[in-house]
Image: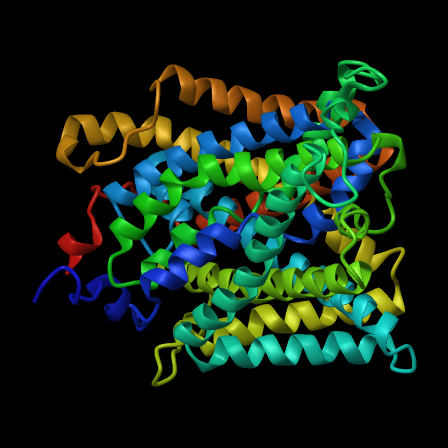
Length: 473
């Protein structure tokens, strides 16, 4: 059989099926970093930082690009269902794998609940007679059904949801460039808006403040390395996805935010509604607010869909190391880990209920206690790559088909930059400090559980040889 048709044997032996096509993985990679935080949250970032928000997005994006390059190096060298959890285990030890796996699962379970509530709010603006909790329940049920159907069903749903987001951004970029150059009806040359009142109007530290906020907008790019494990050519899929993230960050985030502050003065950009809707309104596009609201809903559904998939696959992978109950590994005849999906969804349902029962306490804790998890994950990925690269060069240099740029100095710089963003959360504002403190509590609890479990079992997960999925077949 050719490489094109040979399935990933590790995936099949684990009970999963390599049902995702290359177009699915490609679109997951393209749309993975475009969420509601870009369409709505960018307005608040611009008001906090000023025109220099462009720098915040660029710096945050640079960190993510470097992390993804490191992850791509590891994933092409040793494709694994557990992705960075498995690399952390084999490189840094069981504590790192257990911690990053459960932190990541907890993060996405919280995101699922948050996005279900966000989607319900959008739908209620259209149909105000229906209570929000009913819309949240409907959205959760729909996306749970999609994930339970098959991996291909998830991929197909994500393909079309991501297509809507990408098409919207592309239209915005094309029309936006014409508008700021004065080549669009009603437009005038307005490139100078980016420095009309000065560029660093709120001071240099505001850029750091902005990085702390925007870096979480990028979280989700790493999903492609998890999804690729259920594709026919995981190495190829990961290599292409991680290599293309540079232009995705530059075009989708940095490019579109730059246009926002050129289209209109940064002080006039809305913070509670979508700045993209306001921009489309300036372009003269009718019903701009409704159109962008629909796009934001697709972005919410996309994140909800991906969140359920990612949480279930990470839980499934945790079982592979004995870090989750045995029954989590049960799959149906379509190769779907249905129990892992239902467990992840159930926690999401509980969180949604808490939003209506105790929004200021329990739901607030669930959401904020995962606030800094993205940075913890990035730090562990960087540490894993530094250790794993040394082992690869000594044991299997031929597997380094995709290499981290400027190793080891750029790897160390990425790790330092990630930790610097974590530290800066202490000085930004009260909300980010609370997020950091609660996230540290989550980290401490998970580490505590690991060491209790290890003491009971009387063993540490030993480091294993670096093997690819083909070797294990």
